[in-house]
Length: 306
Image 1: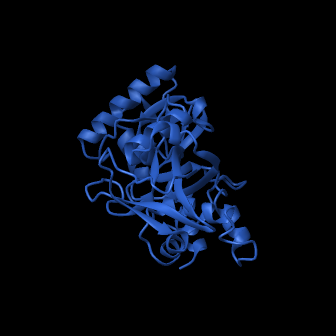
Image 2: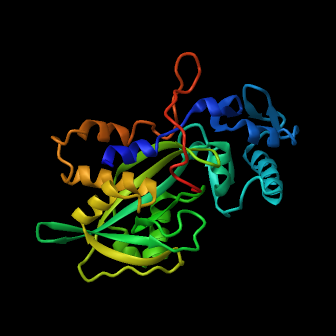
């Protein structure tokens, strides 16, 4: 395996498997034909054709749209079509999360193929000229990627919460990082990918942060999401990313980005430019060619039940 393989694994999708999902004539997501047939059971909420799915034009306004779609999602969860509710509202928008047209439950996002946002924090320690990185192992009772390795802090970004406040909350819940220390986290950019999964399409964007931690800091999970933490030399982290599938797949991308920025993957690496481009190539959404068809980039389900 290689670093580039990890990026490609998170970007396999075929838009030929999906129909556009539109709100107010604006494409905000992608749905599979089978899921579109389920949505057709609610003609007062969704207009379903062979070409696309759109929210009914009779629904107007953020609250009305959110309420109507939420009721449909509740029924689909009860019927077992959508596997669960998460309890966090995710924005449905064509671009940035601030332009949300409505919200849906987080666990439903892949079914509608909407652009989702998250935050991942690299917690690291300096020992002279050497770097070590804190790595967490996800608890085996997690519905998403149980037992996989993870960033020290990583979580979704719900609607109505600022990036700063959500990061402080996640730091406290996932690693017991005190708020004054968490506030020292440095925003370092974002990575994006678009993966076809068993539940739908995931065109996701992850805001990335670096936090240099004191040598005596030891993380502690307060929400039960992480069962153990390890402080590994960055060379060990790199090897695990490159040679195994032990990390949750989107975490591989955040670590590769960290290694590029810290010079651990140097510019003379044979895949350097492809790695740099691949971390941000999708910008959260697949693009269409002039004929209006999505480019094929393979199939598969690399991210699992995210």
